[in-house]
Amino acid sequence: MTDGLPRPAPGQPLTASVTCGGLTFAGASESAHTTFVFCRQLGLIFDIGSVVDAMLPIDTVLISHTHQDHLLGLTRYICLRRLQGMKPPRVLIPEASLEAVRRLLAVWQELEGGADRIPPDVALEPVEPGQEVRLSGNLVARAFPVAHVLPSLGYTVVTRIHKLRGEFYGRSGQELARLREEGVAITDPHDTTLVTFIGDTLPETLERTPEIGTSPVVILECTFLTPEHADLATPRGHLHIRDIIERIELFGDAEIILTHFSRRYRSDKVRELVQQALPAELAPRFHVLV
Ligand SMILES: [Zn+2]
Ligand SMILES: [Zn+2]
Image 1 (cartoon, rainbow, N blue to C red):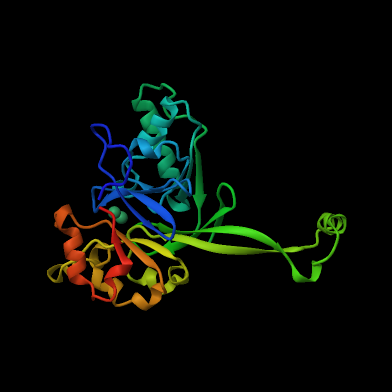
Image 2 (tube, helix red, strand yellow; image 1 turned 45 degrees about the horizontal axis):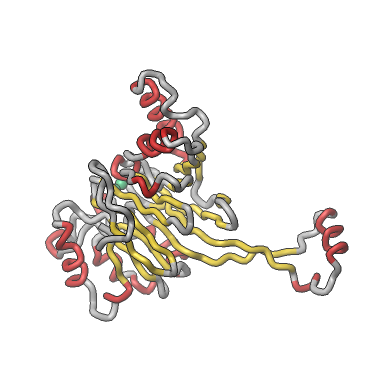
């Protein structure tokens, strides 16, 4: 599927896109090769295995884990933004991997001949499981632990507005300002969940993450598709489509975008294999990003 984005220049991967929940998610994904998903409406990139020009104006990256197929585009992205005069980006990384990524950037800086290709003020932000991170505008990312073979996080992105508590209805603006100054909590946060992104994962993450049941859109890996590969997924820290179908009740009403298909499957056959694996009643809820 094409995505309406300009065709990438030579050297850049082709992207596809899926629109659901009122949002368009573009990117490309193949196990062990690359995964990146970006949403221009949210101004967010989820994982950055590669870079295409359409991602450069987006200044916030949420990294699930540091396998190369999810991270390898980071230095290119940072350098390309700098070459175009854009400000250093904000990069959220699992806390356990932060120092190694810092070292990676330092090594690339050295390999670039010491030129300031990688600006020192790139905002690498460590994120712990359970942490909430304020993004731009009224967006908030909630990180949750993901079971994989490396420290890994998933992210649920919500919009948060603050509504006046019922007991303060009818008070004047002046009075409310005074109460706020006195430290009285006059509002409560109200979140609307937009999307949950999970990188590489074992099935247990699905069972312990209630966010997947409240998100209108869930983006997650589905490395293996066919019956003969049913036993390959768990030892490699991945999902087989059967793992998702067996747990479909955990997904509430979510539309599900599958990524990260094994290189065993030709990319032009992936849709067909997904359709073959799904019960007919589930098929309309599933999308693929390859
Ligand atoms: Zn991967
Ligand atoms: Zn991985």
